[in-house]
Picture 1: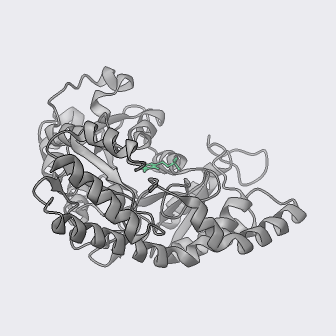
Picture 2 (picture 1 turned 90 degrees about the horizontal axis):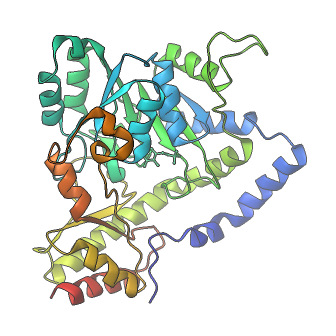
Length: 377
Ligand SMILES: *Cc1c(COP(=O)(O)O)cnc(C)c1O
């Protein structure tokens, strides 16, 4: 039996007719950049994410970068973010000209730990604290961070909060949607996200009218009146094709999310029935609405051998993420060292993502668990 980590071909079959219809309409119109399809999507996403505004952009990475630019964060500033995340989070801080300051994660949720943030801030000199301008919590794998304490810290130190919600569209924290709690919410439409485009794309949500205006200005080279530039922005535009396709898919998103959650429940039962619950550490679900962009297990031993064994059994898995940001070559100038963030380092070497996409069958899940059992028991 084959169990890919993700199979988007099945999803495409369900929406093919709608997609081809709108694609043809856009091809006939030859109107490709921004425009009515992007505006329609912006309205829909703002509503879906309980935010006042949203601004379609070129990718999730650019959503982070343009948010930092809109918050006027750059050279001389620093930004706190978890060391255990996808590279784009930390990379965007550096690209904005600011300095990433890393914090560790919570061992249960893999999200940034508020205790670690407090420790990092406590260790700063008065001068360093003066440079600290923002915090980027990452709602990793589809589950929201502990936002109450993060927002409390942000208020205390007057920090801008940019939620990296690339993996968490529709996730909730105490009935509040990801992307609606901070100053900015950054989403990605990379095909492997829960709401993926047919290429690159992203969107920023905000409740602030002022940030909304700045985002829209920066998206088009800082110019609303053609050839008159108020700010140095960039080409952060979303195109009509991607927006139209994402719009169609948004109608299916809640159904797909429910299927992912049901798959997560099925894994839990299967792992317990297999007697593996002592060997396989299952994902912890807090009170949040977890949307399971990934179903990530943690293994006390032999993670890499298991991965090879599963691969040989035609089961796709992935390691998110093998090297935490503080140990990346490109950040060696920050002078972190191994051992600085033990929880992140442990997660990097012990976790494994299993297939959890909506169309996964019960037989496929049972096969995954059976193979893991065969490996360990
Ligand atoms: C995917 C992802 C991004 C970047 O999104 P792109 O659209 O690929 O640029 C940023 N942060 C996190 C946590 C992600 O998972």
